[in-house]
Length: 163
Figure (spheres, rainbow, N blue to C red):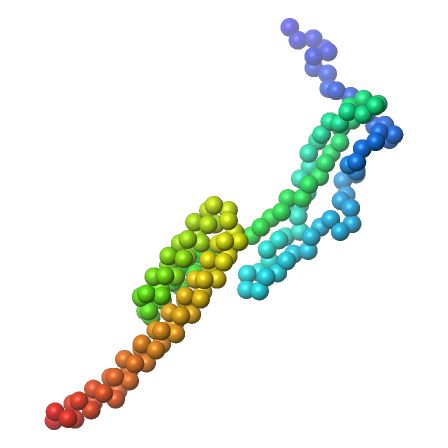
């Protein structure tokens, strides 16, 4: 059978003489919060951290003392992978197939890296996708320019030659 002594809560010492290295108040020291870091083209990487509290029992000369330790919880934003994937698919259909397919493969790799919580590698892959997208648009415009030049200049000349 359970007795009254089995269900008692251990006493928490409020002795101010207890030597602890952890502050007993809930406010962090000055300069504890990191400012958001901005990288060109990717947006904010870090948000001001929230605090995660842990209760730790530390033995002291006056008896066990309950200490609340706070640690920052860093929130890293997930990079968006849907827009680069969609743009790679559309550019492979309408512009340049080879660069578009390379963009699709790298965008899919970025999506898998986000699922594995490798956000920095995913951001790097997304930057590569946008480079492939730019190359796709460039080669697509060159191709469409050559086709329109052929249709406007060369084809009428051929018909004039045979008429």
